[in-house]
Amino acid sequence: MLIRQQCRFYIFVEEKYTILDACAPCPYFQPVMLLYLHVPFCRSKCGYCAFHSQVPDDNAVQVYLDALMREIALWGDRLGNVSVETIFIGGGTPSILPSKAIDVILNRLSKTFAISSGAEISMEANPESALRDSFLHDVHASGINRLSLGIQSLNRDLLHTLGRPHSAKQAIEAIERARQSGFANINIDFIWGLPGQRIKHWLEELKQIVKLGPDHISCYSLTIEENTPFEAAYDDGKLELPSDDDQGKMFLYGSDFLELQGYSHYEISNFARMGFQCRHNLGYWEGADYLGLGPSAVSTIRSRRWKNTKDLGEYAEKTRNGQIGEYAETLTPHDRMEELIMLRLRTARGLRLAAYKELTGRVFMEDFRPMITALHQHGLVKIRNGYLNLTKRGMLVSNTIIENLFEAMDRL
Image (cartoon, rainbow, N blue to C red):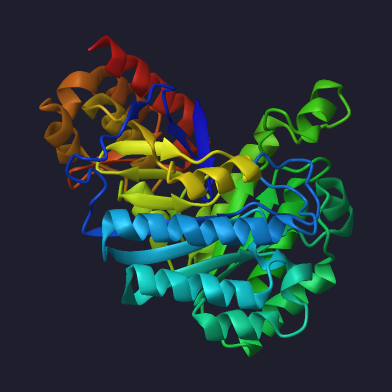
C-alpha cells in the first residue's frame, strides 16, 4: 500500500499490523519529533487531487475539532512532554477553518508538547479562503510563522482545468496580504506539465512567480492519480498532457531559471532562498520520527508506523475509545533502508553511503557497483564526499532509478 502525506512523497506500507501492548514500555517515545496535522476539508475537490478531503457539512468541522482535541490529549498522555521541532498543518484546506480554531489547536499543542522556541510552524492555505476578513493576520498572531499558498497556476484557463476555486488576482493578493500580516516565510505551490501547457508558457509563468517574491517555491509535475477525475479523463483520451520531452525540458529549464534567480534546488520539487528550506519536509527526507494527527494522517515513531482511518465518524469514535494508533507495523531494517534510499535521493544532498552500512552492515558500492557505474556513465548520478546523489537529469527518471535499486536490494 502507498501512503502519501503532505509533501508529495510516497511511503511503502505493508498491510500487516500488530497490536501494541499497552502495558509494555511506551514504544512511541522519541526525544524529538515532527508533528503533522491533517485538516480533511476542502471547499471543492480538484480533479487531480488524491489527498483525503471532503466538503464539510454544518456539523463536520465541530466533530473534527472535538476529535482532534481528544487525539492530542491521548498522545500527550502516551508521549509525555516530548519536544516538537516543526509543525505542519496540511490538508485538505486548513484555511477553510476559522482562525479561532487554528488558535485553539496551537494552544492545545503548546500545552501538550514541548514546542521548541524556534519551531517552524507551517500552514497550507488556498488564496480565496486566506483572504477572508483578517484570517492571515489572526493566524500569524496565533503562531503560524510559515505560510504555504496552494496557487498551482496564474493562468485563468489552467486554473479552470485544475478545478481551483480562486483566480490569479486572488493568488497575488493573498501573497501581498500575507506579507502585510507579518509573514516572513512564504511558500507557493505550482504545478507544471498541465494539459495544453507549453515550455514557453511554463517559463513565462516562472518569471511571474519570481516577481511575487516568495521565499520558497514548490514546483510539482502533474501526476495522474488513481481514482481521480483526471484519471478517468486521461483514460478516455480527453486529457492530453505535454510530451515526455517537453515535460523534461520544463523541469530542466525551470530549475536552471530558478537557480539563476537565487533559489537553491534542494529537493526534486522544491526551491528556496538561502535559509528558507522547509525544515519539516527536510525532517521527512532525513528519516526523522513524526506524529500525524487527524483523519488519514500517518505516523512513524521508533520504527513503528500506523495510519489513522480517513472516515471522520470512525476517527471520532476511535478517539473516544482511545484506539488511535492501536495497530502498528514494525518496520524492518530492509523497510527502513528502502525508505532511506527513496527519500534521500530526492534531495540535492543525496544518500549518505555510510548510512547504508549502518542499517544493513553491507557496503553500498559493493552491492550496487555495476548499476551505479552505468548510471554515472550516463550522467544520472554522482558520488562526492561519501554521498550518492542524482543529477538533474537523474531526477527526471528518479522513480525508475529507485525502483531498480529496490529490485537489486531484493536480490541480495
